[in-house]
Amino acid sequence: MNAVEQSIRRALPVLAEKGTIAPFVLLAWLIRSGVKKPDAIRAQRFVPLAFGRVLIEGMGVALDDTYVRVNHDGSREERTLSGEEFFTTALRIAKAGQVPAALFTPIALLSSEVQAVNAALSAGANAEDLVASPAVIEWPDETPAAPAASSRPWWKFWG
Figure 1 (cartoon, rainbow, N blue to C red):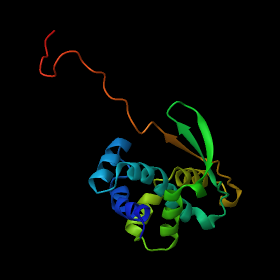
Figure 2: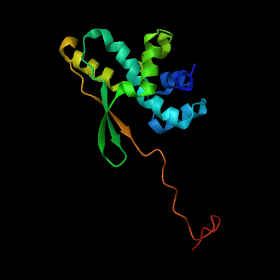
Figure 3: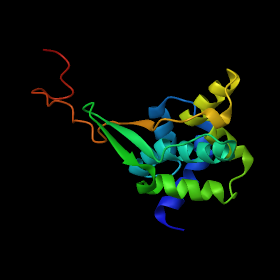
Figure 4: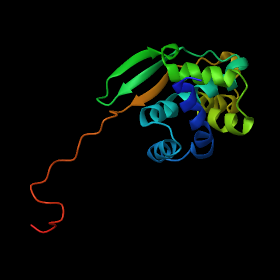
């Protein structure tokens, strides 16, 4: 088992149990469970998408192999999902059927694609008529700026 697969497997119970909470809180829970921060960020972005695709795979929905990465400065770039190791590894794990339904289903339901397909089907659309646009994934700067230095000591709260 490589490091990416190990990170994903550690992330699965946390994503299943706490996936709907605020992203920054979920990130803290993932890190607390032993997932390194860069891996936790990628798990949040790609594991639900991969699991969701396995869930809707046989329905006839046309899915795109790209995603739009929205960078911290607002710029956008289109990339292939097959070039993202976290996505491809999570997809392989999901397709292998090794994840219990108690973990798989809640994670798959976090996927924006699953939510969009569900909404369309609930509105009366046929799955075979649906064509998904590329997923949009926000990619904020992962290295936040350090706070501005103060000219006074931390303990001196006056003037």
